[in-house]
Amino acid sequence: MDESKLLQKLRDLEALFAGATTAGERTAAGTARERILDRLRELETSAPPIEYRFSLSDTWSKKLFLALLRRYDLKPYRYRGQRHTTVMVRVPKRFLDETLWPQFQRASDALRAHLDQIAAQAIERALDTKDADVEEREQQVLTSGDA
Image (cartoon, rainbow, N blue to C red; front, side, top):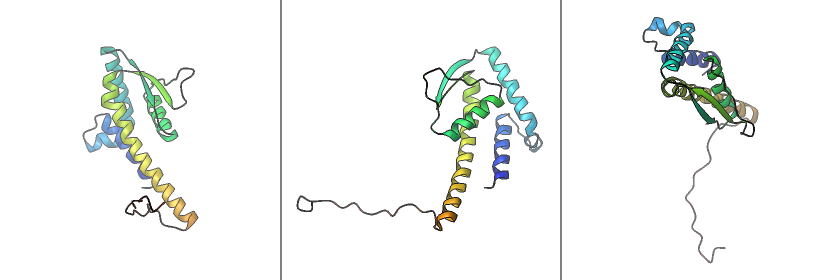
């Protein structure tokens, strides 16, 4: 997947979570953010935001999650003493469950696949070798006389 395909996939994911159902709605990715923001504002009036803590395992996941939060005008933070991989945010539970977290997971999967492909190609070119896993062998059982 090249960079332009990744970018389009991320835009399409946002449109999907904004509730785009027709091809015309999906192509209007600019309005997807506004529809999501409208839904967030509506949910904030019916249910107060709850503080959530997220522990993200790697830099790319954290960068993506922070970008999504900021895209939807949510304010990420962490408390003094928390790890740098920790992200705190106040958000309505329903928005988190139905929109934010599923969108993050799918975008993270797409980004990780793209980065894995780039890394595999770079390693292959730099070291002139094919990307392959290790050989799998049967485990040898040592007896008392084999040591």
